[in-house]
Length: 129
Length: 129
DNA sequence: CTGCATCCTCCCCGATACTG
DNA sequence: CAGTATCGGGGAGGATGCAG
Image (tube, rainbow over all chains, first blue to last red; front, side, top):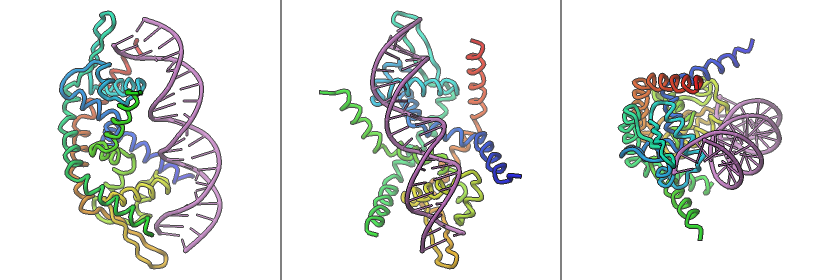
């Protein structure tokens, strides 16, 4: 009768369904925030995004775009010319995320210095003994 | 002259310093949000947190707490009794994070259903061809 | 130009055992 | 009670090659 394991499984299941956790898992992803921000000003082509997010690998960019498309946050438009042209744009749902991203940016700009100071102090203390 | 590699390194360095990215990396961490929420109502003991976040391993809980302490978001208080008692509490800086967490939760509750619908539709379309 | 498949590496995290 | 140290599996992610 592994009550412990049961409780853990139940909690894991709960976490997997928790909307806030799902959202955090999404936007916490390294490339998601960057892609969303890159699309904030309007649609962009795949290659354009790749050039903007210089250090993203092709694999991760595609994977990120697919996930965002799957979640209805961005729309993918294929223009069957030669060569093919693909545009990505924020959907209304994706745009509704922008204020939240701005709030996050604002907090970061307001308080990240404090965090850095705390971090430096903690490391100094650890180094000193 | 690998201009490409240079650009990537520069961009990586930029990202590493970007406050918003640092914040996202923090709160995007699976256990950080849960610990912060668990401490929102007041100080808690280590064992108490472990029991609340049922499925967290000792290692990850300690690691998460250390990181949050290092960043000045939570305070660690040791009471040298026998056995030792350790309390964790949000600092003012950590508390300033709560409105942001609430905003995230709000967005999630307002829009996560849409995301789930989009996801189901996408998967259905993929399955159907 | 856009994107998928494969291989391969690294590191995150869980499990376990031990300490003050 | 509150950690630290160590080992090993698994998954994330980069590099490369190929396709439409």
